[in-house]
Amino acid sequence: MLIATLIAADQLQKGELSSAADRLTGIGGQITRIGDVVDGKTADIVFEGDLPAARKTLPVDNVAIDFVVQHAEHREKKLLISDMDSTMITVECIDELAGYAGIKDQIAEITERAMLGELDFEEALRGRVALLAGLELSAIDQCLDEKVELMPGAKTLVRTMAGRGAKTILVSGGFTRFADPVAKAIGFASAEANILAETDGILTGKLDGPVVDAQRKADLLRQSALSAGLSLEQCIAVGDGANDIPMIALAGMGVAYHAKPKAAAAADLAIKHNDLSALLYVQGIASEDWMTD
Image (tube, rainbow, N blue to C red; front, side, top):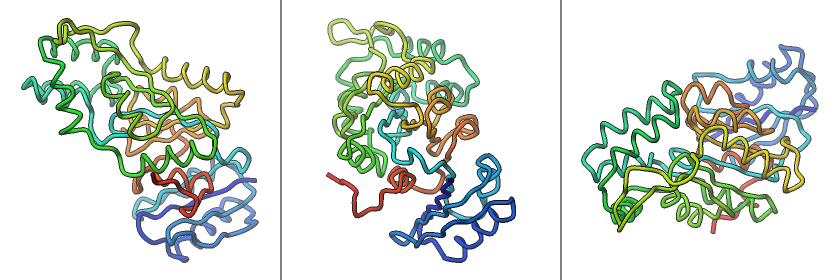
């Protein structure tokens, strides 16, 4: 049994729901049930059919609706693992931090190419960190206060899933000095990121310990699921860049959130029109059951 979920950026019209059902029928799908519109913006279509074909058929470029098709089993996930920069927060921390060193444009260009998958992640990261040598640690606190904003829906998503018993993990190719306070503010149970080396309150331009890269993100997902006694099908992974692709591809539900093209192509679901709370609708959790504080 498959479930197709439509999530409108504004209001979901019954005609849009009927049109989606017709498209599924057109590829041989057998509709079992068309659900009511919930919260004015989302509805499910339950059907029997071909999952890959349905995923190719449903998306419509000229409507502000996010579509996801998934197996009914394990719909509500028990482990959430997510990237931080441009996913759980609205900025790339290293770019904003570079602004306090007067080199934001230079570093942001490298960041963009790395997230597009055009550069080796570790090499690009170490190169950018080297450019921050000599910056005072106080700039990080200032950056957190002035530049870092939580992504809309982040708290609602994480706290609702945690409140329903899910394990929640923030994993970042950025830095612990940002990831730790961000994880606490949102409600993640744990966080892992890179460690900026410093001496006497000054960044040295180096990192301490191994780099949290694409492979580490995927390994952390696999290890966390195993330790929690969960299958990968019970996990949801969220990210936006090329270094999130292995993690996204490994999870039962891989989500590209307002993502770069390569990440979107690798994902089971690309959220383009909604905020992070849409991932609760994806799991069949209506707003009356959300935790917002």
